[in-house]
Image (cartoon, rainbow, N blue to C red; front, side, top):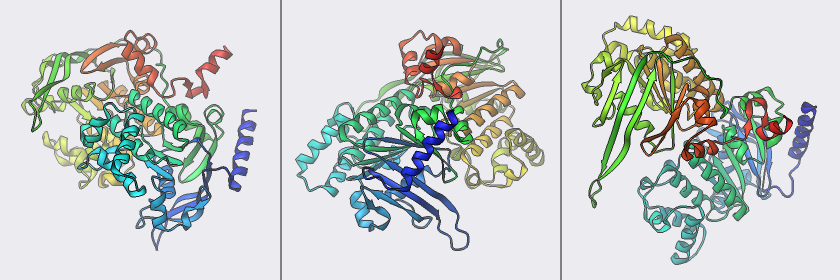
Length: 567
């Protein structure tokens, strides 16, 4: 019965795609995009069709490389002409065919009729211009209004996106604002001329859960206020569960399935859609694991203070860590969660020795460690390895993988031939073969690059592995693969893992213990069943409630409310 209902829904959607609805704000029909190449052009999008209706939120989901962002760039007229070109189909915005419009006309439509919010606000904002200037520029280009009227409009918009102290924000540079505040600025810039269509391309991926929840709520409120239709591009079905009216699933540049939010999350038909939905980690932790082993890493009374000084002000102290106590045992994963600025990454860098000048004690197997890495013996440095968030920045783009992965072993005295063989053995564990050694980082996908970063750390045979947001930039299926790989490595090597993340759902699934941090302090810690199911602190409860899709049981394709009603 479920399959028949979903099939009927898809039939309705395909019928709707065949003709342009009169009330559709955006109608995309049989959109095709391919690479610019005379000898070997490759298709990127194939026969993509969908509608977006007034005040509707359509979520386009899929893994990296599925064509989500290319679809958005095609609508906005932002395809790089030397790399991609539209080869088929039409894009109708309020009945106007954008494919047949002159470039100047499309420029005039941007910000006034259609607008876009990108994933990384720092790349969307000019770092040398104040926020007020950049917002003013948008109005000045498209509207002939007096300066005082423009400024008044900007101040109202800054207040509308819930930014504190609009006059201060108006005069600030982007780097003087937090990530969440910068994203609010980009949203304000996109909506200040009240466009009919807003395209948001992964706008919350890099944000912690509480900021993410605020941004999603803000977009919904602004949608009601301005009557805007939204295309929300994401790989996170938790976010989809919070914001979507309808969902379009894409894979390899083609449509897989489309339907309402409840139909796709509760009755997914295509196996790929089912795989995507069920890959979302749940907020409820699995059963408890066996008792801990020997203590490997001990952190006691760890405090770190930065001194910030500007040209026109005195230096002021910022406490990044305050009296932090953490133990990590062999064959144990300790998850450290908290918002941006909670001190998670500073903790990791202090343990590794990348940040010095801290007070307290960090011990490895009972041996106290010096604050700075340069003061630690090679044998000790080898025993603590770290994997960072961005694998592309972690690998030298000009060096072959063999050079990056054998560098540590060679530096510690191992012959190059033996180091290469050892790396090849580790590659088999992470699911890659020897041919990877002679390739460059750009020749791998994001998930493969993160696997290589894990291999580079594991080949050193460390006793402690620190993963600092190592899966936050990955889509859900690749994230699941990397997490499974990390657990497999732990089972094989009995390594101690300090897993740092802002995603409480991921921490709940992988951790033996969870440590919650806020403002450089530990708020509470314990086994996941206690921290998630019976949190003692209000801040922990706020984090749990902020996790997107907390009301859905994705693995069983149902909402928790529905499950409770059935029982």
